[in-house]
Amino acid sequence: MSLWNIILLLIIIVGIIAIFYVITYNNIITFKLKIDKAEGIIDESLRQKYDAIAKANGMIKKVVTKKDYLKDYIDLKEKRISNYELDRKLTEAMNIIWEVKNDFTELDNKDFNKILKEIKGIDEKLVSCKNYYNRNTADLNKVIRKFPTNLIAKIHRYKIKPFFDGKNMQDAVIDDFKL
Image (cartoon, rainbow, N blue to C red; front, top):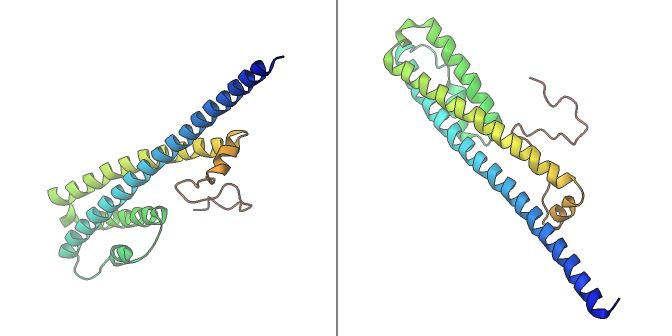
């Protein structure tokens, strides 16, 4: 084999490796962008849900003056909690709102039902975004774990990303999904 053939073979091999590297890196970036976009939509939806619950709380306070049912939930804005925890707390607040609505017929009016309908729409959006987030997170984690794409992920310091609920599927904790 001549020197030119060896050089040409090396150029072809390096070119194939470079193409593989670029394609893999772009796949990782695509998953990260999808995850970031879903995270942004989830964050915005949780804020909208919080605001709608605060509006519902104002209407509840007008009808029920003796007790502040949602005080702990309205104070959530002051606390530093994850989106997952905020989602859980807002779901708890919604359960309380439904109970109060069932107990006080005065709340069965057009404005209050409009807020509840708005929250239902936000919840549907949240469910789809959380599924989209988790699906893309699973795909990204597969790419990060598999050889040889894991080498590219290590070069760029990409790590396994947790799912929306923040649970680490790689640890030894088996009680991750207790309710």
